[in-house]
Length: 116
Image 1: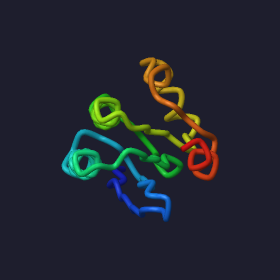
Image 2: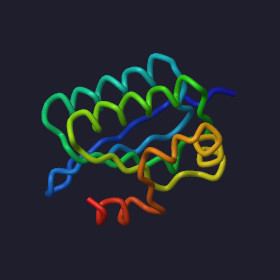
Image 3: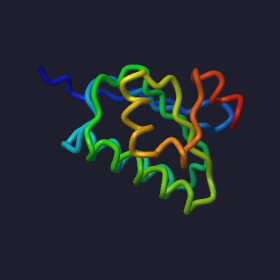
């Protein structure tokens, strides 16, 4: 059964963009729409983003590509991206492809915000 990606977003008082993802992060219209949103924020001057992945159920290779695109855009902008609250399954997948070697992660959103 497919669980469509849902994203809720907020901007903290200190200017950090926090995106809470829930469902499947795949290379589909929802995944690419989120990629466009996050990259648009970076193009607009955002330099700090937290991705709360606690609600992500499944992740495919294109979903990893969505995260990589956001990470690359942030790196090119000189900003900082932190992944927070990774479920075990997602953490294992991202670890296998060594994505966690190039992106910061944190156990909770609160810890991620403190790092920024």
